Length: 151
Image 1 (cartoon, one colour):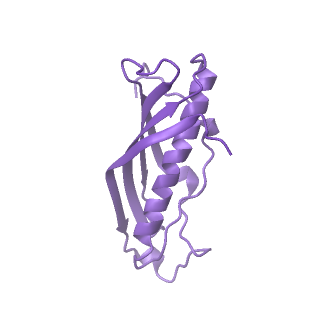
Image 2: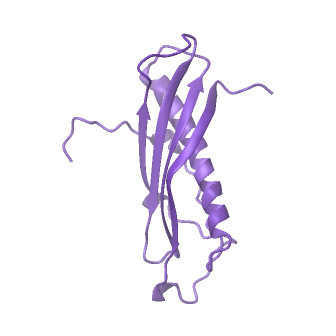
């Protein structure tokens, strides 16, 4: 085994909220597996990537990623809002092409998302509706938001 070129150096949560939802639509409803799994296409996701003004080591590429997730649906027993930041270093610095940066963002997002899955599973395990498991997501289709567009 060898280390991945992309290394997570640190992460921390700035917001972590999980609430049980009381709803008549949930009476008698049971999860289809041992876990409640939210609908993947309804998980609201925001990703922000920032770079330091200067790179400390010329052979490394460092960046900070912020990931925000939220979910709230009437027929699901939980709603959650999560925000966290991760500090990453890539030891195999290539030319910073769009495809290389996309690959880094996809992998870094997957790493942070996995930490959120574990936290929500742990927090929900003692809730009245039972454990919540985030679905595995494919982040390869992430698209860069155009900051010049008006919303």
